[in-house]
Image (cartoon, rainbow, N blue to C red; front, top):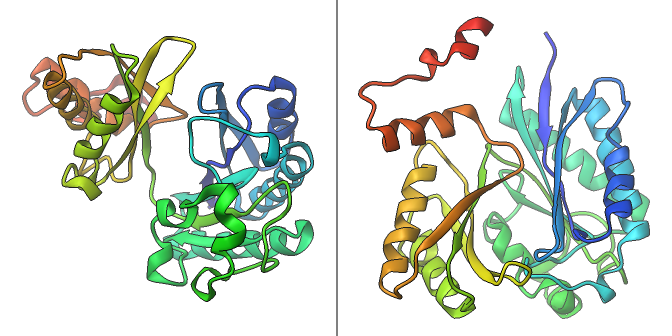
Length: 298
């Protein structure tokens, strides 16, 4: 039986379409690898690529894509709303079919070792792959971003798991790990005041006393003249899309701000959408097995 792993690498480039397409091409026309989706955001200045494949083929494609990004992305000239510490900021591996989490962890370490040596790039293992507890949370690993990376890495507790002991001069460092599927979901707000979006994000996210499996931050969307609460729902079965959306709406009321809409970044599990449809339509005992396409695949 084929083993399928998903990978969702994030690259610190969302404005130069040619660079993004060159990186995405590393996943195209490859045996046993399928490019599922890629999207870019100019305000975040970031691109998210979703790819899936058999472990060994996926490994080689990811290593190739990292090389292209290291060559073409220069963080000394990079700015954007999304925090970042590397040209390739994060590389998560997600077990999908006939693959255990332990196998995904092993693959992440193999990739980390390879790109650390091949591209002289410091690698920090995070989430399920983390070698130390303080590295499990990506926000901790990325704290200080590219500009603070050199000083941060002087501390013994931030010695990289693979690669050199100092940042790559233009590509910084990368976080590599294995995790469960997450939903990247943003809620747009009818205000240009970033302080309001940030205050709402602090209330919604787990670290601020909000939803257990939610990470959130306020982001300014200059081209639209609004702001958003940008969220990662790290376990959509316990922190659903509709709960995150409604909590943002609830917190926005105290500032006299309304919700302008939602946005899914990348791919999303069908179960996560079915859960929210059942909530908003008030469906009793609705199941994913009632979705026509699901029944046809059984």
